[in-house]
Amino acid sequence: MRWMRSGTAAFRKGLAEVRMRGSADSGKVFAVVAEVIARVRVEGDAALAEYTLRFDGFDPRKKGFAVSRREMDAAWRRVPKALKESLSFAASRIEAFHSHQVQSGYTAGIPGAILGQRVIPVARAGVYVPGGKAAYPSTMLMNAIPARVAGVGEVIAACAAPGGKVPDVVLAAARIAGVTRVYRLGGAQAIAALAFGTKSVPKVDVIAGPGNAYVTEAKRQVYGAVGIDMLAGPSELVVLADGSADATYVAADLLSQAEHDEDAFVALVTDSAALSRKVEAELLRQAKTLPRREIIAASLSHARGFLVRGAKEGYETVNAIAPEHLSIMVKKPWDALGKIRNAGTAFLGPYSPVAVGDYVAGINHTLPTGGAAAYSSPLGVANFLKKTNVVSYKIQALAADAPHVARLAGEEGLVAHARAVLIRIGREA
View 1 (tube, rainbow, N blue to C red):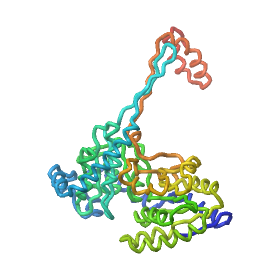
View 2 (cartoon, rainbow, N blue to C red; view 1 turned 180 degrees about the vertical axis):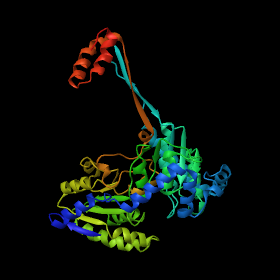
View 3 (tube, rainbow, N blue to C red; view 1 turned 60 degrees about the horizontal axis):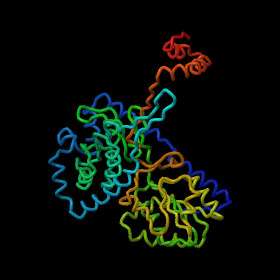
View 4 (spheres, helix red, strand yellow; view 1 turned 30 degrees about the vertical axis):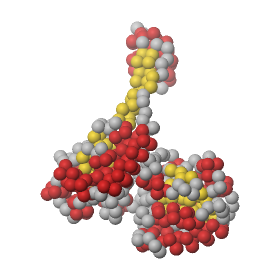
């Protein structure tokens, strides 16, 4: 972990670099994704099959793009009972939490008119579940359940499937989450198929779910043709700690996010030099016992430590970073939370490890990264809802408002706007 002390040029430079994370754009990634999307949009299943054979090593036209009901049933039988119970437990927590996010429309009348807003779910949602390095049933639950809670009629899942095999536990999670259909498709080609549709894969209205740089870039490029949840990058965690924190817990949380992948970003913000030394020692000790040591070493090679001069500067540093996950391990964590504006999810106190949020607490683990927590929110039910404003005037109300409309429209040079109102009350613009 690279440490920077408050008040130094290194501190300012390091914080500036961290704030720029995720902003670099690879021309190669952009070009590759643009070609994939263009071909899938025009050639449909043929392009999907070619890219899947090239990147995942199987031809979906032979196995079938969609996972069959028979395959789903067989996978369900193979998953151990205890694991199914844990998946169901997590699903119930996620559903309970997200049920509080359901929105209803409203009416807000003015004299002689009814105004309101209608809230309805999109017709079809697509969720993307990555694969390759590991199986991610939690991602299936976290993305599909909010869509179902929102009332989406069809929830389509595209799952990365190297060799054509979607992990049994991911298929079990799909069943528990109420997914309508599962497709063995990964990468940018899966995003393109969901966004534009092919003969085998239906077009969706919203795409949600994390992925690698190619998947994220594909979501960026199809946005507008379809809605997306966010442009999620590598996992992030900032721990805000003072001298009262347990270094063992701090290091354990940092390692839990560092093991995601080599590009994961972790940082410690503290006003205690003693704690910083203890955490460094704990990182070394605990990392030796973990199986993903190479991934962790790569992640920690660009981890940052910010040694601040006090609590106020600690809050300012966290808000500047705007992390995906924030662990607050200080004497009064709730007081500290009141000073934090920018974080995807905050975990308070020594007994709230980030891992509970990843799996069973019920909050969503699809979160804004790369500083986007400064202006955006976790994935939720709202991502799968759309709103329609409603206006219903009576003639008396229209007559009362007409002079204002005509005056404002005239100021903007839009005569037809004024006429559309005045003609209804027997006047001409």
